[in-house]
Image 1: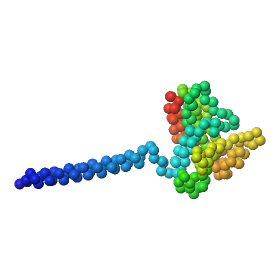
Image 2 (image 1 turned 180 degrees about the vertical axis):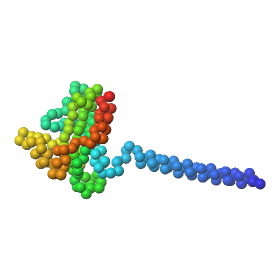
Image 3 (image 1 turned 60 degrees about the horizontal axis):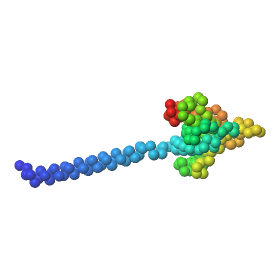
Image 4 (image 1 turned 45 degrees about the vertical axis):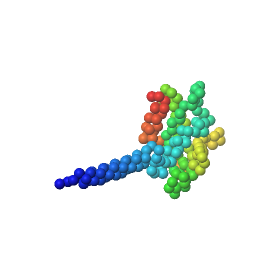
Length: 192
């Protein structure tokens, strides 16, 4: 027969194992939740660059990435409307960079809309075009391609961008998924 003392010992050991298993499951859950949380950086360098470009452009004053002398008008309100940007990376320097901290210059395209309340995308103030970001400064420097009185846009683009990126910049803007994501974020910011 089983004595009460031996069954109490077995029961006590069983509770210890249950506690160990629960602790292991809890630790694993916390680890996975932190790893998959929104504060983690994207795993690949291209995604990290896109996220950094978008954040930099959205936090910058719209005047920093205006084009052809057209400033972004924010209406008569005191509160600044959010800027919602879509970006596309054409390339970066040095090409051998493997970490975001190693990237010094990014060549790409940006399309930003100023999300004033209840102003639909079709009539929103927009800022768009090829852009160079100097990632060696904090915050990153923003340089847009602009035509001048004496230099055509395409010539200025060729002056500022390496040839392989200038050719792409003349033909391609945002990808369809990036544009759809930008429109969704714009509509949310504008109150639609």
